Length: 373
Ligand code: NAD
Image (cartoon, rainbow, N blue to C red; front, side, top):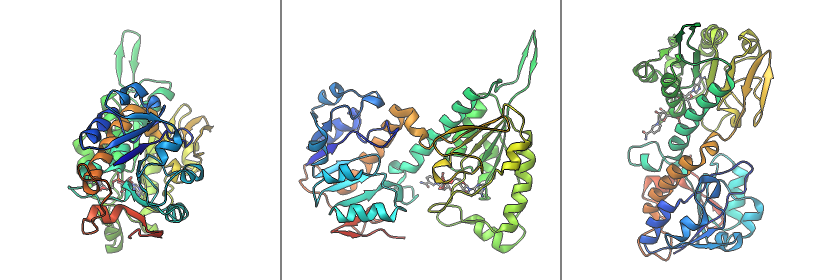
């Protein structure tokens, strides 16, 4: 099968959907690869590395005109214009963007959004949300440490003692857990909050303290348990008690890393303008939810701003700042997904709808939106 790997054109996107490592594996499966010149350069994979494993280096038209196109981000209108009706597209296609899906359907594409894969054991190796969130959690702490004008670890020196940084993590999914682990390695003292009760043990096992906000009603407990491991919006009664507990910690914090998300909804607002005002000058907030509206009321998506002496980082694509490893992990996720739809030496993509992962990821087919859920 002819497989195209275009250069990503979204602003700030540095990742690539196929690395030389996975290109070699696709070649071994009998597929021909058209890699757009420069597609991997920002992720430390020059054209020569793809050519060395048998890929052809081509222009955008040739890469996007393939029967199967592997991307990171949804195609722009210009990119869509270069794609063939009936072709297959695999990428992170924003399953909740109805207009975007409509454009893919209208272009006659069979498209798979990998973010829609179920969070099951079998789907773990193709879980792009996890592979990229893990990187975002790490990078958020590295950025915070860079912006913060003091040490993270406690230091006892001849010139005096430096206190350890106090870090508060809001939202402890994949990104939050990695943020705790990374901040811990740097020597910070960490407290973390999440709505899901199962998180407490994970937080404590990483050496952080869980900010307990007990559930007082059956409705609160049920919402906290969520669906399929995901959080649901919590009742206001619980959220107001959580805000009070979080506000106390935020006022004492040197760094806040917020990662709280509810799939398909705007990010919950956990840090108000007043809470920012209560923080010490020089403190840093890194808001991983910036792309979904932000967990902090003062976050400006895509920008770093100063408010009341606090630096608020609203970077919307942290994995792209770790382009090589983010691409390496994403490309392996893509390769694992392809095992479900692309047989060795196949000349066409197969869509086995009895496979729960394939069915969940299928967004468009035959001119229609097929997205489930
Ligand atoms: P996510 O990115 O959707 O959300 C991040 C975190 O924000 C979640 O932990 C969520 O509970 C939390 N949150 C939402 N509202 C909040 C609020 N008001 N206050 C504080 N926190 C709030 O989460 P994710 O990283 O994608 O993980 C979602 C779930 O999927 C987790 O249970 C995770 O363990 C699970 N998971 C399972 C698998 C698997 O089994 N294969 C793989 C990855 C993740």
